[in-house]
Length: 217
Image 1 (tube, rainbow, N blue to C red):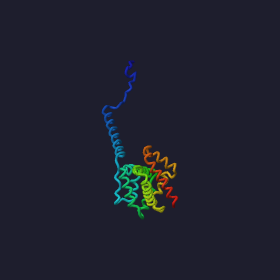
Image 2 (cartoon, rainbow, N blue to C red):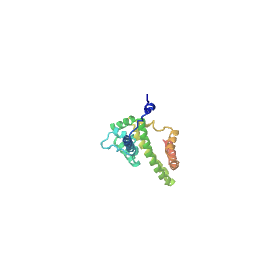
Image 3 (cartoon, rainbow, N blue to C red):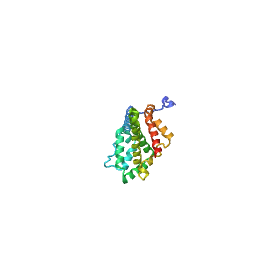
Image 4 (tube, helix red, strand yellow):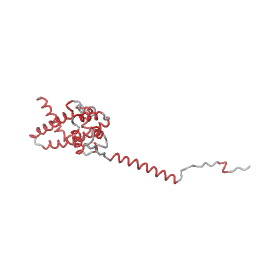
């Protein structure tokens, strides 16, 4: 009985992909990667248009303020102007209460997005004021500091709603430090050494002037 040499050794057939299939898969993978890259670029580099304040409700505006692709991506001037205009529009009556409640409904992440963006805008403005202060003759500095304190106090009372139902600052009390150590850590983490050196004289002058004014009350 003869034995077929080929059958005795049992050939193993290797199943592979044809060149055509490989090309199709490669093209498909490339398309998927391109779509993902395009989506990432769109999400990363596009800025959503802010709600029109002429028609928007407080909730729409607050949603935008907490959106990573929204408020933080506006330029500092545009950011500041939009926030002031939004506050002025919703500062009274039911609109103010609605705005305050909208801030309360923010998630912790959304609230932090807004706080970070607002802090950056405030930092830029404070450094500008510090430059002005540092260039002033010593005889004019107290008046400059008093003017700043008066403005800050007016803004604080207005935004805080004098402690009433429309206190729009209440939802953010857990998002900003309320101790000297906490504030110091925040300032150090968000500023450079050169920025702190520039701002220190004005910062110290405001603190001293606050104490002097408190003693006279």
